[in-house]
Length: 475
Ligand code: ADP
Image 1: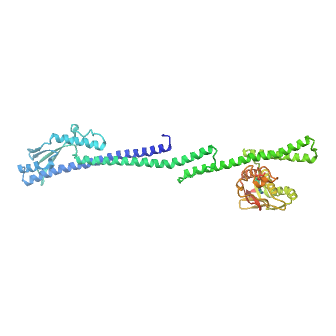
Image 2: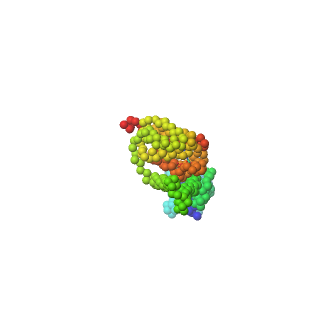
Image 3: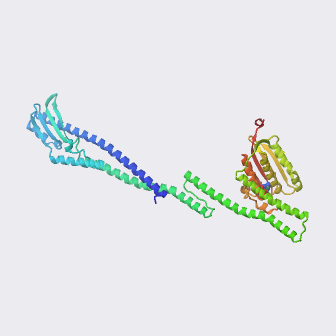
């Protein structure tokens, strides 16, 4: 249970809230207790002063320590909580008020309650036995004349009333109430925040499990806009899409490979059987057909090997500064004859002296593949253009044809290995769908890019972009 995100988050929120409440109430208790004690001490001092004022007033009213003056003091309620001894200026005993022992007990009980209310436990320092009873002695002076002195004895540095205890108890009740409310809020917050995290995680887990079972057309939708979660969901969706595409490609690939292998093998088998059975004679024509099929098989295997090599990072580039203009012209020239025999015009428009840093053979392979596609997918009477231009940083090679074109749905996949559009599949000509994969891998190995624009029935343009080297750096 505690291993779940939800439980962990709730525990974390409640735990941290509880800790904050404990800390705050502890600090508040100390602060309030301290301030409140000071307040009570001041009250005590004020009470002493009130008693002194009363005594002086009584003395004044009666012009001396007469019995009426003593009565006024005796009946006044303010002396109630104190031991009082008044002596005249000759230290002769005038008046005494003895605090009832029951009052001391009451006071001690109050102190105990107070300590309990403030600190949640009895306060051990507040007892008479431990010297909490104090006596303060004051001179009684009227118009600079000493008329006597007064000793006021009281329990503790201050007096505590039920009201005081109620006050501190009230504070503690409020803190406890705040704590309960905060914990409830923390639990709700914990549940809410855990939902924010656990719901998407559960959705992603479900999607991942579906993908594990082979259901790849899953897409997770998230209503929450948390950046990190959104990124995670995007990655999972991308993964599902890619796996789905790869699965389609793999299915297509298996079908393609078996088709590619079966066709030449069937032709070879039937021809050899016919010759073997004496139905056919092994004439040069017949042998030529067999040889062509064998060549097709060899080419396919070689392309597969080449692709496997470059995809397994066995691609070693022999980088040199080369003149792309010359290289492109050479490749175009080598195709002249084949285009001519197929009745397709091959035109070139090549900017001279365009320099690149590249592996000459690999780059040649790129243009050979693109030109053989232009040748393969263009019908008699069509035109193929080979252009070389430059912009500020790059050399741009465009190989354009007026061939069969590529459908929009196929364009994203034609660089995938073994991908062939349905139109090209139905044509007798055509390879195994590896040529463009090789082109893309080689161009990217040269820090370049290759992209295509095409319209079915109108033709295609393949553009290769390679970082160029300026003449001055070349020199
Ligand atoms: P292939 O060996 O089949 O030519 P590629 O990888 O070179 O394999 O090309 C993949 C697919 O892209 C082709 O089967 C074809 O459908 C499409 N394609 C490539 N070049 C052209 C082009 N110039 N015109 C029309 N379709 C093309």
